[in-house]
Image: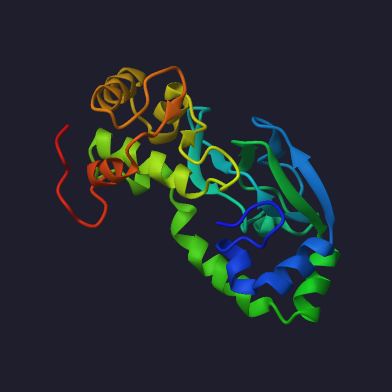
Length: 230
């Protein structure tokens, strides 16, 4: 993905193309968010959309037990908040920055003017359709996989959204965060992370950093291959 000054090559930006993406970002104001900062809060009123220019985001919703269920991950080129554009609408999820992030704040009126001026309604429709599969919490999307495969897939998905100017193999989750995101016991996550480090798939140390992405992909069972033993 292209980050910073270029147009991202994924998400809504890819559907629009560089010129229209630039026009969308020019229709609003640039805002910067620190790692861990909340961009949107579930239950708050809408009235604007954020076009993500740099960084990764965690999308979560409140569970019945009071915890936060991970629904999706977002990165440069994505929109967040488009489901609650109207000021009377309520946000259906909470969005938190996994990295230091930059996004363009576009009001409802400005966004609608952009859609009309650029004839971008079809691109928005296609983008929303592509996101429909993520209405199911992330942990339920992976329910048929083993704990190791679920952890590996989360790490890969996070890395896939990393900006080329950042540390692309650093995973901005703690082990507790992974456990909460996937609905796994913390002891299970700790055991699996330790095994991945011992096998050289992850770098040893406090931070989660991938050393062998190719093997991590095989461990995730991506492509229909059976789970590779460590």
